Length: 297
Image (tube, rainbow, N blue to C red; front, side, top):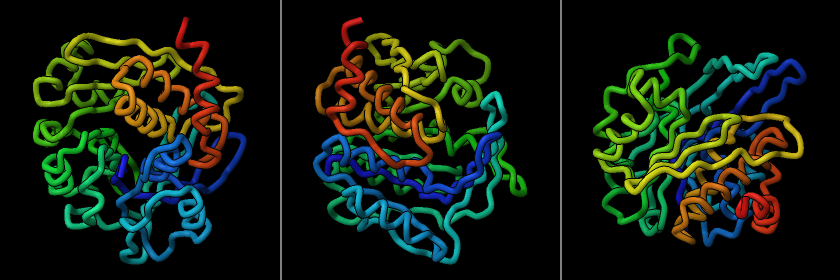
């Protein structure tokens, strides 16, 4: 298995000034990028409820993902309502949360993955055994921190203190934050100081996405700035961070080139902007073509 992506799938209701639409969501859904760009076997570990739409299951099957780690537990799939205003600011509500994931949800072939990528939607989604077992498997372990920084109060999603931060990050080789999440996790310290604290814990790579200002990728040897790769149109930004990170991981493990991997991930994210939900994933040929001018600029 080249990559196993772990986290809840969700039924996302998207509300913008222009449209209202339900879509398959959760970072795990964006693992459909992996087979599209030629990953050698890619799978997910997740839990859904009995309300999970058959059309979503069909889309996941048709993508080529290994779905042996998808289990149905209880009545409800995790359900997010994402409301965007005219400026693109998001308000979130949660209508349901599926049961948490544990290390014994892995099957034997998951433990032979080259990459484990964790993308929890909420702080209680992953039992620590998920990370512990991935770490001991010898895989490259990646984490999108988003879910750990969310609390659910009533049906609202609000920021939370990441009390287990240091314990979690010591199992991780690569950590992805957006610039706002980095401030929530580390307070009002300079970005470079926050990154230094993170790399002392274990991560060798820290990705900081910066919306329309592109992204920065830190390693223990320095910093690489990745420009925003322009999309042909803007439809929806949901899932761009997930698409970026999965694209980055696959290309980094293939080439060992931080800048190329960052541009590959940013280009994957640009295609994600052009549609609602984790559908119409680009092929490697499409990504390479759009990325090419940025490689030599």
